[in-house]
Image (cartoon, rainbow, N blue to C red; front, top):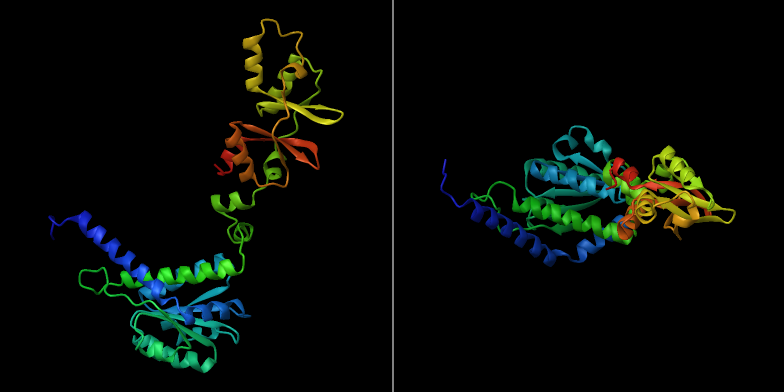
Length: 321
């Protein structure tokens, strides 16, 4: 074991080598790449992605990215394919096979069977003279000059190139399909990302109740209402709808300003023209508005009528912040 190597230098050299390999991929975005994108866009079936060894791991990641961005895909391990998993392939599917050399025994055995199915075969390969490249309908070139491995053996730069090419393919498909953040949310309902993309204001405000007072309400009534609902605020409502909001901050400022508050009403201390959000808007948009205006509550409306309050603590509990 060597302890005196320059670890920082080695790490930087690795990253620079892999970054250079990715930059070189821009030269390989050719007619075959464009044709493959268009074929997938017109595809009535799915994409079957296969590989062996480290390429199989990259293939699984490409499948995950395609599925999450609106392109149905299935992973098929190259070794398992010849032991029954070829049944995964259906008539209208397109097959993408990943291999650095394109000449591994498993790939050389598998390719003739793939050709027999009549499906379009795309090779994502680092050797254009390989068995796989020569028998594929289209080639996505992921050639690299060398691996980052000091022995030029362990798949490092080559798998990075495959991963980046897969991302380029998925993003092109996503862009062509105009796959929006709302579409993305359908496939990511769990976790913080999913909640930010699908959770509505109503999902939170409907659990809070609707504190409200009239403009003529006295201070005692205002305090009782704010305390009862524990939202730090109450809406001020008259016959024409929302006329203001009173928050804990408004109460504190009132007490600092007036020695005698018994004569004051909600109309005297409320903030007029309060910020509001519609029930059907995203909770994440409510957070943006709160941050923009440095406030902790928003009044919620439905068809212009008062429907409740959303508090910044609601967003915190749901992991939106």
